[in-house]
Image (cartoon, rainbow, N blue to C red; front, side):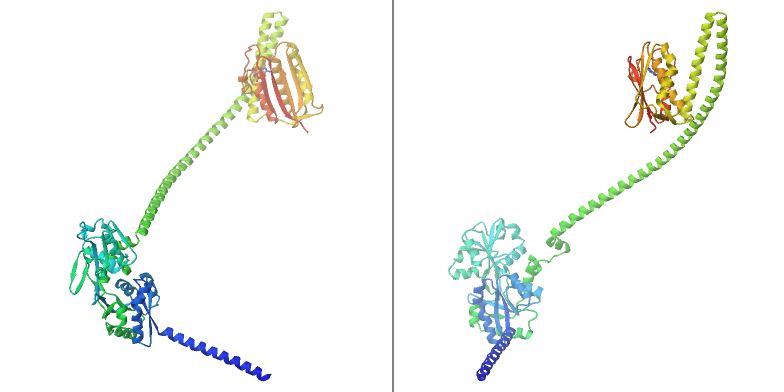
Length: 616
Ligand code: ADP
């Protein structure tokens, strides 16, 4: 039992140990394998599969020649992606076209260690260029200038031999194809398509790299004589038709961090590769040579402002215009708006400042004028005060100076009247009576004027005490009864106010008020007329006294002035009066915190209403 158990435990430990060992070996192997792998980035311009078929054996050749390393080709179709991977340190070497190399050289510090000796028609060539062609039967295009307003086709805008070389060449000849051609189309496929499109007449002219036409003719795809070459050039030891200068073939590129020992080993291996090596045959090349001069490629890219030179500018002005035109326009636009805004604000400020100065001036003027006006008013006040004093002085002296002789006149007139009666001198008696009446009227007038001026000056002193309103009115009616009877006028009196109720008033003044109003009601009434006096309580504890007569009434237009002094609005000359009574009445009522109103219909009668506060 125990033996079984120990053998199971031993068995398990053995299996575990074995697994660990296998894992360790695999790990070390993988690590070494990774460390040994040399990655060659490959520009797969003819597609991943075809490119691999063409170049895989070159990698194998290197692995064979430098056995401590395993070389692999990493094909990438797009040049931007290839450059990006290279920038991230994914490659030790790169096999790419000249313009792609130039970009890596400038951006990443890559160097060309070899140039490809390409095999064209069985012979090695380290240079290539571009061809512009049209159909032979197209008699409208015979030279470069004829491409104006024509349709041009090429494989890609970024293709080197297949496009850029031609653009540069034509620019050197003073012909900007981008501006001059009517339409430029890029197939995006392979260069053979470009030839087919021109051949079918779907474009007027095409651009391909050198030897493309010869190769297609050799393959029997086209008849070389069906095409016409534009801008034809001849270069010694270069048998293929070409329309441009020639540029170095693809370089074998060493990345900056790749060791020079390894680079040396690779260069040596490739330089010594025999042309009949399977790798060379598959790669369609004869071999490799020391690096060509890639300066013309730099020059071309600089001229076209492409690749690493897309920001290359002759001057700062060009730089701004080419790369930052939109930013520049926006900045200028913003600057203009800001300038306008600043100018606008400045002009507003100026206006405000001017306005402020104006306001300040006005304020100063105003202050001066207020000061002047105040001074005027002070002067006027002084004058008024002096005048008032003079008036008071005048009135008090008038009171004495006029009343004294007037009383003497009245006294002597009454003596004459008695004398005339005794002597039965009727006519003389009547005349003296006239003098007495006129004297009394004058005395009344003097008294009224003096009263009014005292009231207006505030010198009329009132003593407000509770006064029994019912009793007061009854007394007043009694006082004027004889006067009423003389004119056969009936006075009726009704009160709703409790017998004991009192108003707050100055006794002498309130009596004066009622005498004035009732005597007016008699004066301006007709024979057999009526006077109706009523006293009622109002809601807000006021006592309302109305004196309604059946007399002459007052025209509506005069109702507003009858309380002003010296306003007599009656037509009747037989009624004596001073025109001051109502003015005194109103002043007295208001001094006792009361109110007086009038309603009247001409020819029918008037109602005077007085409101007085009841003592609670
Ligand atoms: P007068 O001394 O002339 O009566 P008042 O000041 O008392 O002065 O009245 C001013 C004027 O108001 C009078 O001249 C008269 O024309 C008019 N008046 C006053 N009371 C009445 C009234 N009860 N009926 C008609 N007219 C009146």
